[in-house]
Image (cartoon, rainbow, N blue to C red):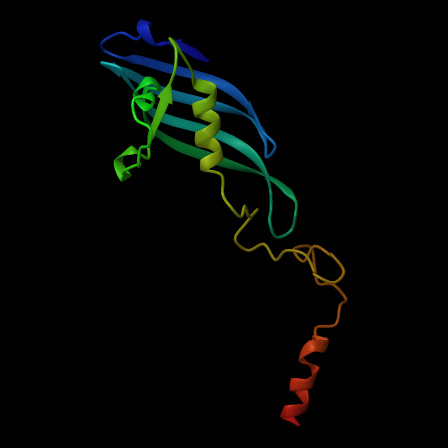
Length: 164
């Protein structure tokens, strides 16, 4: 969804829409409830993004649907502000800052960025997920495998002799 910056009213703009985001990690419809406000050349966007995203469990490798709710609080400045300075060090209060160029702002990029930043680094289908057996690959959530639990790493075999 694109918004024309000059057409944002003084009291702000309330937006509610659905956008389908497609990345290498997922493809999902995202529901957005955003409040866009313009103060001089700054554009402040606050709101919330919600989605049900299909992820792959990092333990058992099965796909599962995970609900995701992402708060949005970003301030955009014109990119011309950057061109005035050759180098600029970011301060802590500038981490939620973005830049726009031209007369339009594409909210697709904002939504995609916020969702990607809030995806879990190690998604789990459940906290109790047992994963898969490292030897035979059986899903341990479905039952035990027949692998021997007493196998010792051959590199540690010499330490076993010290116990004798």
